[in-house]
Image 1 (tube, rainbow over the protein chains, first blue to last red):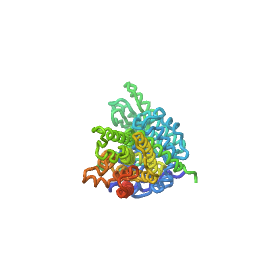
Image 2 (tube, rainbow over the protein chains, first blue to last red; image 1 turned 30 degrees about the vertical axis):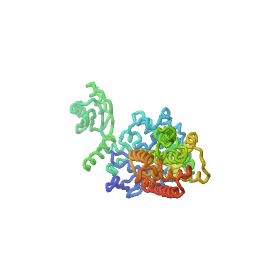
Image 3 (cartoon, rainbow over the protein chains, first blue to last red; image 1 turned 120 degrees about the vertical axis):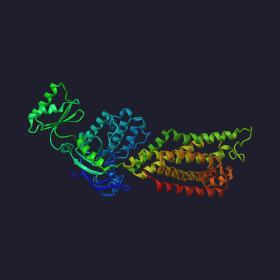
Length: 314
Length: 268
């Protein structure tokens, strides 16, 4: 299958300041692809160039093989989009909004069924401005889907949602993927990227800094294998290192990275795990999380976006 | 080629027009300014003039009373019809569009298959539909107040034409504000201009009755031009020369205002 989205050497400036610089990536058909980055990294600008709202100053953008700025009329019926700012009439009612958008497509979803799918059936007649933040987001999501799009752009789809609404949204996005719909989403949430995306592009200050699967990015971040666990803070890491000392040639280093988060720099073996839990058990300490392998995507993200951001200044 | 995944343009236009109209009628302030206020003004000034403080005297307010043995409603109706066009074209449309821009509704619709001409067409159609309602309502109220039309078909056609030209002029002004000012500024500007034109724009009080230097300036305003043509069409006043001048001015406004809006409109 070909690329649903192709971004080739794209640059975008606002008043001389480059917001996106020489950005290139491709999104395959049927893929869930996440653009991850801090505020002001250029995520929304990138998405808005793909949606046809802005023309790139340099480079080339193709969406479903078309130029979004000049072939918008042919492209728009095949896209679904969710803007960061809702863009919905304050006085409209959810069912009414869905019926309006359904009238723009030749074979739309059933508005009532879709409303149920996003969990808004009880709010069908409530004016938009009276909906909660999470309900507004879910209506915007439903509007993105009502035309049975081939490709969906979701700009921070779960911002401001409570955990339950987020779970519903994640379920819907997984459902889209099962139906072969391509999804490009932006998010600050590593959790979201890890749960949903097949591949993640991390961008910072308008540049691509990493692009891979969440698992591969996590591995790369740690630069090797190891073991992570969570337990009450303030454990005697020296004593724990001593208890594990005979397992590896140089005794494994044990660190408390932040309160309650520990890292053991040793190849994870069954013996190591048994030793660790025995040591904790002897001290009546409960292990609340255990992760074998490298660091998390979050660490990679913070490393790639944090330092650079500080060096760059404002 | 696969069949187009977007609906037929006419179906989109119909859906969008129906929604625009429904939302307009759902906004209390819009109903107040387009339907309640013109009717109130028509009834109030007719009543004030009829039962003026000097018992039996008809002209309680200069220029409002029945100068030549006419009922007050005869003199008032053309101005109130002009006011109705102002309220729908400028105030209601302008403020609604300004907030649609503010809330990103225009941007979101721009990302849907709805073409921009269809969006503009829906706005025009919903304004015309609301105006039709206003005209029917105001003529009905006027009839109750004793208005008996003595108008010929050509004059009715002239009145209808004036209403359309006025819609273009005031709709243009409203969209100009909506497309280039902040939403709050449009809200204040459109309402403020409405009040100023209502009092000083030759709508209720004809320009001849306004203080001297202002009166001649006010005659150039779109409100005075529209009210002037309507007075000529429905009330046989003032003379044809004055009406021709008003008609020319109205045409000018009907071209310039939409042009200004088209030139300056920003969608985001």
